Amino acid sequence: MRREAQLARLAFAVPLLYFGTLFAAAATWPGYSHVTQYASELGSAAAPRPEIFNNGIIAMGVVCVFAAAGLFLAAIRAGGRPVWTALGALCIGLFGISMVMGGMFPMPNPLHGGFGLGFAQVFAPLFLALALRGRERMGALVATLLASFVFMAATITVMMGVGHLVTRANVGLWQRANALAMFPWMAVAGFVLSRRVEELDGR
Image 1 (cartoon, rainbow, N blue to C red):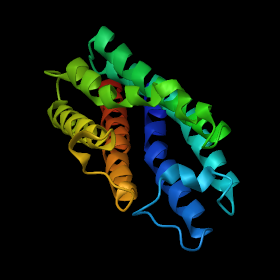
Image 2 (image 1 turned 180 degrees about the vertical axis):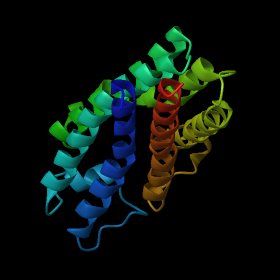
Image 3 (image 1 turned 180 degrees about the horizontal axis):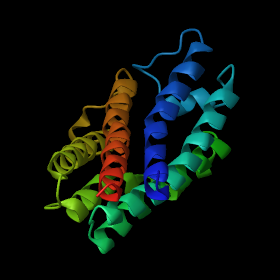
């Protein structure tokens, strides 16, 4: 298997690590609510086992950086436009760095936000869609990427206060909705692009 396919498949692990860490850490905190509490509270001093969440998020961030390189290489191999592909991979890498910082500096540390680098993830699927549009066997992936971008942009906008829909009574639900927009598309992209690289190598 080519290096591009191997690295691209690391993207499978990103949502698994995030949601696995989220639920494993929550299981150690009786009374923790996915409806009313932020995920990052699982890594705060108030949590019974904050190291579970913090170490898991750090691991996810590191994997995310390597997955960014893999998705870049695989997308280029699949005919992706270099500039858009590079921008998409850069956004994923910046997001990975922000996750590492989030785990290293638990809330309420000001560095927990990773200097806002995580917001770059919103644009990653859009840039990759622009990179791959019109390329052979990429139509379904492009549609998935664009849908994920719209879903992620909408949930981020709501989380930032637009429409005043987020309250302390439902902030956890909105954050989980945002996570569903933010992570699964990476596994889909990793699967499709790694398969495409293997197909091209088999010709």
